[in-house]
Image (cartoon, rainbow, N blue to C red):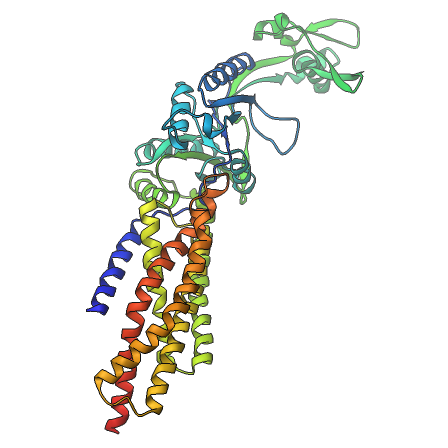
Length: 510
């Protein structure tokens, strides 16, 4: 009956484990938020500045927000390739004690997301430290992303838009945005070499005028105390705000004649890539996916099925899932090696200590007994499996094996003593020997387990910064130790008695 109940608990535990999500690292509440919206390329500086101001004001209107700092475009550094259409808002929040009653992390993000909702603006929410790490490691600022590889930017953009439409229907998608790779606006000057030759000019002369008059040229730098400002010279806006006016810009010839630029070439507008990404030897395009109430592992599994079913990827093009999911895959592949190796090493150490395969297997039976409580507690708390959870589970396995070994030692001593006194002749003697060993081990087992339980209690009750990760590490051990203490005291003596009774009876028959 005991073994039947244990098998039933293991089955329930296995079902609960299948209901757990998966993620690389658990969400860490940093006390601040990073809001990173992006709009279509080609937005003007004026429109970008206006949108930046209005979004900042909408965020600041939420009572839990203390300050907001936003930027559009890039900093003056080679490590920030952000275009003008990409915004960043660092949102500093008030202490939780000043939040409205019932307001939690997800509720706050949902309210902020509604406050900044603008048609045509993709929104992504993350944390400052976590967002920077994700961007530096994978180039994706959202928890999940898709990288599209190929040789034609137009085809890559079409695949990205198909993915955008498909992924919008997958459960758990807060927002999805495929980069508009061909969305940039360009003004080209195509020189007429024959016309240039007639006036004694070369292509460089015309391009110099285009650079200085239209784009602007830095000619010097002024120093104002500790501040430095560049001096840039170009035509005033009213003389260069349309193609006709640009065509009337004068180019000086060697003879002193002033020739309009429009007579020396052709000014045309065209669409092109605002930024070209190159990765793994191929051109690349990104799709950003922000999640809501969904674990990355489960989401990507559903998304892959939807993409396989609805998106047509031409030959020579391929996609890869990245972001946090990229590291999740690596972690899962390594755990397939680390966990079996850990169990194998523990079994080897037990065998060298006990000199008995059956006793080593008996002690290893504590592993599923301990994992029952850990998995059930994670299921009740709504936690996903992650690096932190597996670290706690591996630590739990060590504690479980140590605790069970204590009980086996006491059982061995009780059986050896009765065997030496000749008191192991009937089933009742076997039961009494087992009860005696289990009772003597009770205090040692209880102290070994309770010491860890009470040590983890402050972590499980913590609410400050960093508690999110620490609870994921502690929850498998905390729940597992409780089930280990209860089940070890009941199940292990029964298994030990069955094993030893069979050995004794076998010897008598021989």
